[in-house]
Image 1 (tube, rainbow, N blue to C red):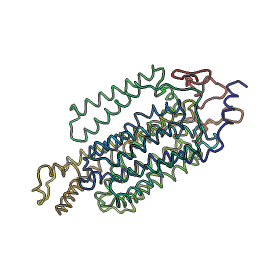
Image 2 (image 1 turned 30 degrees about the horizontal axis):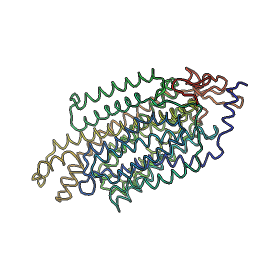
Image 3 (image 1 turned 90 degrees about the horizontal axis):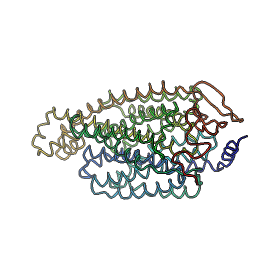
Image 4 (image 1 turned 180 degrees about the horizontal axis):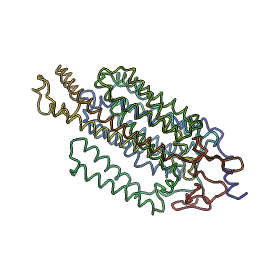
Length: 568
């Protein structure tokens, strides 16, 4: 038996025995991210209200959502590297503290700009928090329990989505809009106490160097791309300086980022992870699935509180159906993966979500709420089937000393997808609504509006409904609703097309072998990966310490420190 074999067996015997209490704490911390996001979905119409909210424009609302996810995604690579260098427990504490402080500041924002800045800082806190949660699970949970732990971790999104709308709706019904951000503070305090009490120190054998140039390029590149998409939806021409220039500059910076990572001695993103087919295909599927989901939830919140006329609390109650579906789908996915394979479980989940997006093409202001809730449940169940097997396939091929980096990639695909999804559907909604309202003839009573008020009505459905309520012009609200529904049909059509692309990628790209590790350290099995966490091709081979990632180029493990690894 080699020295490397003995060292790995010693590591596995040293796995903390309190894995389930640790899992509970990190899942609660992870849930905080999704709780905040779902609360914001309910609060968007209130934030757009010039009386009860901040009077935010559609573009400002998109940046309230996108600033968080953009900074979150851009700094996730750094968060993963910090977790690998200083230990996930320390980055968990730092991320929670920063998230709580920024939430408190955002609650008392006096304008959209302040809130956007606070949301960006919250994104930094989440970037420290999210990779650390999955890294803790991978390092502290025995291998035979790891897939179930990942399923519970994936379910945290559903729990957050379930609790968020209910809490947000109740708070908005009784308090001012800032309460939906202030509620994060006591939750952060409880999570901090749990992390300090039960999460162990899990420092890896090497310390990694932070890649500041790469981080800057990723943030600026993603920012340029999203800015261009948002401005396109705000009425700018695609070839104008506010759209084409940011898009080209953003793509160029992202290309420089990728090129720099190949040469960097301490890359934020280890590109050799993508030489594993399951890791690459899983990343693309997650990117597309979360892009479609985030975009759909963005316009679904406006639909429920707009044409359907629900209050924030009632809209939140309806959206619980999606959350329940996510939880049930996440828990069912391990068994279905063993029965059908990870490949077909993921494909079925993505196809189910695509079908629900198509269903929105027949929605109008009289669609029964039970029909809406049923489609939301199916959508959530489909997303639950996707997250767990894809994450298990991706993380099974990542060596322990790169667990933070692998977790960061898994998280980046979700958050970049969410950012681009909100930007895409927000731009379609805004662009089509403007076009319909420009061609529409306003009702007679609205013709006396001031130019500024008329421009607001033609720009924002929420502003039009607010004016209609104050001036007692139901015809104006009906005109705005018709324009919004046309915009939603366009957005949901392209969301469904995107989901079908994800289905094709899952079917073609997740055809990996089922490799399970026996007690003797050997490898056995064939066929599709079953999603159990035993892993696809790319799972480290214990008999080859210099090739910790399995087939392909070694991932900085085994015989000694790799690039960017600083011996202790």
